[in-house]
Length: 427
Ligand code: IMP
Image (cartoon, rainbow, N blue to C red; front, side, top):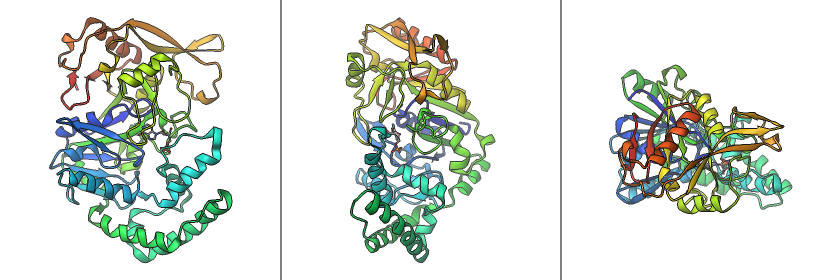
């Protein structure tokens, strides 16, 4: 396997966990490079469901090196909780198979609290964040007031930096939001104690991954969220606070862009979004409800019902283009079984004209309407199909329409939650 980037090509929840878990079989090193515990990667193995938030999906394969890079926002509590959860289920997780970057920024209690208070403050203008402190942590990183994992390990330094940061955050919590401030000493004690439990996992992961590359190891970069939630390319301000596509790898893993040899996007056969913001192909009707029900479309991190709609070829085309994807994978094709017709947004209507390209100013694009193309549906259960030729003819016609509209080869189809429920088309 060449050095590979796998990323979400919609608004997150594309089923990356399952595919990355599958591809991890052929990798030596699996690297997360952005986001944090806002992600929820679901993997089903032998009927057992695992939901991973922070730890790379490669952890379910023994003997792999799993890396949380410097670009990830790490909540030490969630990190340790997730390790404990995996251990309780019989998995061996230690500092040999799991590494945490010393340069990753730390999410503290005040980040989580401010994330939630800011959302309340925004009222109607809220983003619909996961409330995990992601935005405030990245904001502090950019403002150069954040603390990194290595800072946490240096007790005296950590205390003085955290003391200074909390003094300011407490003023914000109390004076702007009218809430009780956090107990300074309690926070200092909590995080310095957690630091000791992190220590066995911490190293310079950038150096580690570059060395692995030089030694010929097979590296898989695991994107979280989706391209349309990318802070630069997505539907700003309704985005997450990191670069979610292959473009996030060089900075988020300190790995050279020119060594990324293969780039693969992942998209559902329809489309979902959690939180607020533009979603042109959304179906606020019984179709959307039916997709939600058939696809069990509820957030794996927050449990929120996901907004549902038809596949948007304009958005996926754009997402694959930005990351320079070689091809893509379609997930949840089985969820569409039973629809009499299925639709694809192939272009947008705006101001009397039509466009096939993604409008960078979408949030301000009042009156934009997707133009749908309809295709005959299929009624068969396709969850046991493993060969492309054995899919119903109308399902194949739909897949080929997606491929044509998006303009990039579909390398695999996923037809169920289990590892082996896939149809390989050249991945
Ligand atoms: P944040 O990342 O918690 O700040 O949330 C910002 C936006 O990204 C919100 O609309 C969230 O619902 C969305 N988001 C964050 N993580 C995920 C994810 O893993 N899947 C889908 N949406 C996400």
